[in-house]
Length: 112
Length: 136
Image 1 (tube, one colour):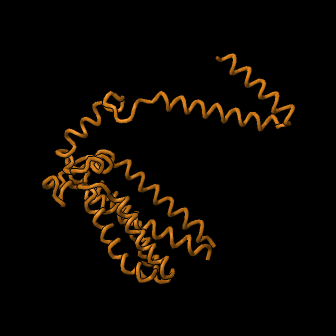
Image 2 (tube, rainbow over the protein chains, first blue to last red):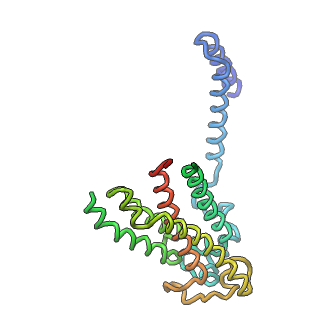
Image 3 (cartoon, rainbow over the protein chains, first blue to last red):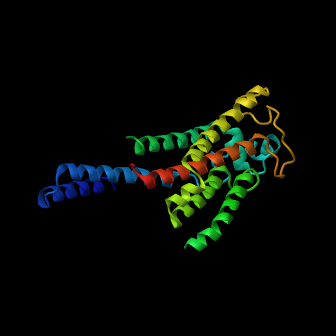
């Protein structure tokens, strides 16, 4: 199977390069893009199924949030308790990103 | 278009305030509620003209609200230190927790959500006005 793919790629390269006259840079770009697409598809195919309780993301951290989040933060919405209580410093960074963005826009558009 | 947006805008604003204030009870929060509130002001500026939009909330007010939102967020974190917790601590710093499920519960979460909502709404409005005005 691997040999067939390699022979196919070689024949395709020779055909495109010498009969159709495609430049070597363009060919290299297409092959690299194809390799990236292959690797990404392979990664997605190997990912654990969505929502399965055996996923590695379901460890002791979300269990702690789900079990004692309401008593620890007083918020019924678990997402809100995570982003504003447990991960409040991260949300401060997000707000800083907004602040820097607006400062950059004003500095760019209002410069005289 | 103008009549419709004039009718719809107050309801959008009330819904935005509702989403901000109920950020710890229902889906939503400061970011989405602020985006809804800012979208209503953008709708007014789009359906009338820019002067009518600027009359609703001037550049000065928008930038003061913008900086005030960020400052209030940081200040809430510092208040937690003064009360004897870590930076941005909630229960450990002794914010009033209330009954879980009520509107005034969650301690610092409600305060921070309101500040984030103010900040996001004024960010959207300021961004829109500045891009529309262009280089003047």
